[in-house]
Image 1: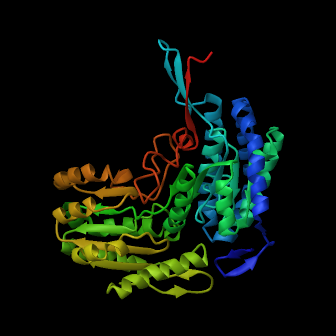
Image 2 (image 1 turned 180 degrees about the vertical axis):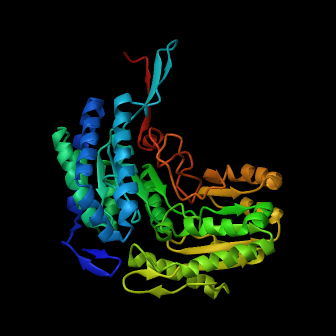
Image 3 (image 1 turned 30 degrees about the vertical axis):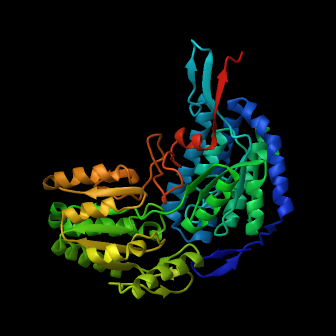
Length: 473
């Protein structure tokens, strides 16, 4: 396996090899040796590793950012070198703070009965499998799941994403240097690049692996969920969300053009390859919806083709559009692959309420890339009906004017059970790293709506177990 530059489709850099089952099992076995050390070490020692890791990364900011750009074609400035890089190092330092103050443990005491309850590590490694779209801040060896697992004092076995193996290798080298400097065991951090699917299943089944942290497609997530469920092991899964935007009739009539502009800007951010992309816009009032469609089409026609992360992303996007075409829904603009590399035209599609109900599985399916669907509904009652039929989402936005207060109240009442995060007016693309953030949601957005993948100390609780000390000295 070699890296591929999505901008030109050409492979570059060194060869990365597929790990054998024996090598993966050796990782699982080694992780067992690190469990007790990490569980019992002074928090300041592990925190020192994270702080040093962040410092080492900052010293390599320029080269790491360029490498990530070459492997993903994501914007170098400000996306990778500033926004995502700063997010990565901030998360590492927040995890260090969690280790110092033990804020993730949620200690409860019953002095009368001499009992206390707390959260403790899982007793094995967390297998961290990161996505293609955030090579730094969600990487299995430097991202949110990694930080949460380490904050809860678990060893980590990371799988590098095939879309950015060189970036992952460089991150891992800095992690190992910081690990060794902090005198943590080598098995506290391990990484591999590729494996046969059956061997990956065997690794999940190893006694040295206690949990899975996964960000990726619904199809892959569901396969891994079935494995973990069969093993009785926890799996933190971020999978699929279209993050719908609901536009009430008053706002649609008054602000059709500006709503379209805000939506298209968010839709195309990062090439439409954010898990929080607002992929579906539901607009109340057919005349206003027509105006929203016209302005959105104008903007998307003027936008250049997007470079997608991988050829697999491009193929999935093309397949999603073709599925809608076969069902009788044709692009208003775009819909074609372009070259060089893995490029695709910004694509807009529109359906009425009847089509959206009939083709719900297609319209409401996540598709990475510059594809947006506008659902034109007749009135606010239909808008509310669509909210009731919604699957679980990471986020959802309500756009309303004062005249829409009754509709907004109904949508809020419904969406609080459907999404991990609700926004007024703002598009959902940005996700702040904050203790108050919920980056989660009901299935299929994630595998468990009780948790968040962003924001410490809460995110660390995914990789912990409860323990009661009952009359223990």
